Length: 419
Picture 1 (cartoon, rainbow, N blue to C red):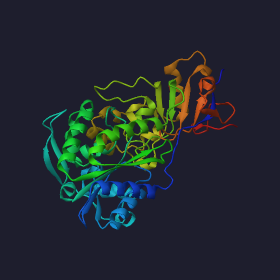
Picture 2: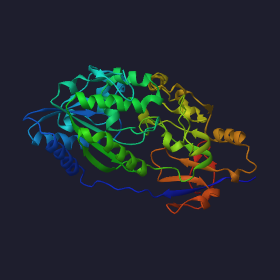
Picture 3: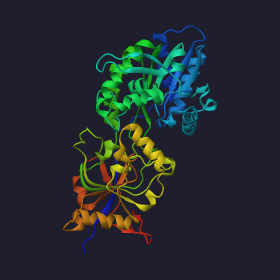
Picture 4: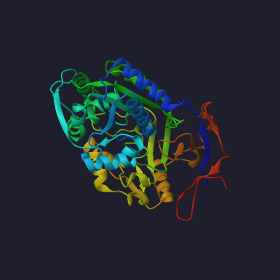
């Protein structure tokens, strides 16, 4: 019988790095202070979000240190929409899990569910109530800190970044719920409409925008004044998109993700990598095209939250047994993507999963199956592809092994190594 053989390969991505991160953040913060003079001892509120930004703590430390040296009183306040269950305790727990504490950043970290209504929106979507964290409304100045990157549920002028932090993160649970009620098709317009009101009504001195490379390292730090944020973020989103990792093959019969989880992507598996959204009313991406998607396990760091499991077609019993359904359902219901919580066809182990996939694909010969295996959708420098795809790889991808047959341990787990 013919065999499917795999080859381990390595991709090379453009990966610039900010080497003196603290110095760069200090420079950009001073630039903003120069353009937005503050009275001595001003209370400056700094947004603290829930996304797993690799260098977030170091960035906060540098911002806090600079503001203190300039004679001000910085503090961080939770700006994470409905994440952390929307409660003060949940927000604090989430920030602590990310290392964002008063002891580490050098300034108070305030968590609450309190918001104030600033006004209503006008264009492009009119009549939306605009909510903002009470701490932001009471501060002498607000500094927005966030990563700019493509979103996993919608695409447009603004995705993840400073504008979304202003519009959704700072609105906390009340604001986030209102925005998500509109649906993903309205997200870009809602972000623009709400953020413009926040920029007009609150003393936003500017933002520190972070762009990461394909290895999650900080590639760029940019200080943008409030008037510069809308246009500046658009430019940085293009930069972030150019740094994103991707699969080296755009058309696959099968992609196997060995591990998914909230610590790896807000949707468990990055929709930009797998080419699947599964959100009502939004078209599916044209590429990559993956006929069948399988996921084998759930990360421990996800704490049972299997948001995104519904993006797959096949999974294993060991993953399903780890699911915290309450956490998964709350996440998917809040974000408006209930199908992403739907558990796909579940097989006893990896071997059984592959047998099921072969029955679905019905290949004439297994060696003709176009397959890729990745550890997760965040780390794509090294992966495995079927031998028949080697001649389709570009010059940025090189083989690391000789071809070896697809094999399994006695317990039915996938083996990815030469024997």
